[in-house]
Length: 363
Image (cartoon, rainbow, N blue to C red):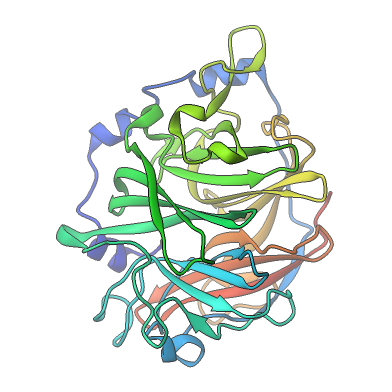
């Protein structure tokens, strides 16, 4: 999420206690740096171009979702495309009536060149995917959605924005129409660094999970866990990756695996026998990517590539976007044909999900 006016709408503020909790569990960033070092150089070579707007009054107004964001893409078991969207409004723009989150939009085609929203969970009025009354300004923001076999899974962050009370996990066995609650984690788990999660579903039977704080104002680490495909809904089955003072190993208390920073949205995917991480970087602002061989690769030294650059409204073009965030990788992407969902919000009417193609990733 981005922008001060909407943040004020959805957020009651966060105090020093929240910031102090971030490093309350696991090894510190300094300790991790003694184990792994390196300064990843930002590679600015990738170019790109907007493919299309996926949401907006013209694109999704007929589903009572003219203003929505995130659009985390996942292929459904029947091969179509599902977009898990965040705070959604109908009429008047951001802060307008009929506030819902999360909602599900659909494209019958998952082909990267022909994605068009032509359906919604709820039909002509996109409905909440799970119960969320927004009492006291709370919301339910998806951080990831993915499919394993014939089951879809969705991870949500619950509470007033940037004050995550807990995160919870849901599954659907009917392609995203109906969702069943599985489990939850407290917002202060691992010092808050288990609030925002993203899942790389590997062919080895493991799901690899990167997590961090959901608060763009707080410097935090990035933690790595793994869990068997069949156990993603069991919190006790998540196994941490960490540094024990001499070695990195599974089962060691979780240690930050990347340079501490202010993280925005994160996306972790298994692709073509390798792994891709994309994220909204807050300083300097932009959406970045890292490509690496193993989930346990040294991200401290893996080159960072800026794939979306911020510009003021009216100066957009190529991979330059006004007020960008998000950056989730579309299923079916390759390193040579790399597509991401980019959100944009800079006033009540300019709030949307867009599809971008990135060219020239260094792999």
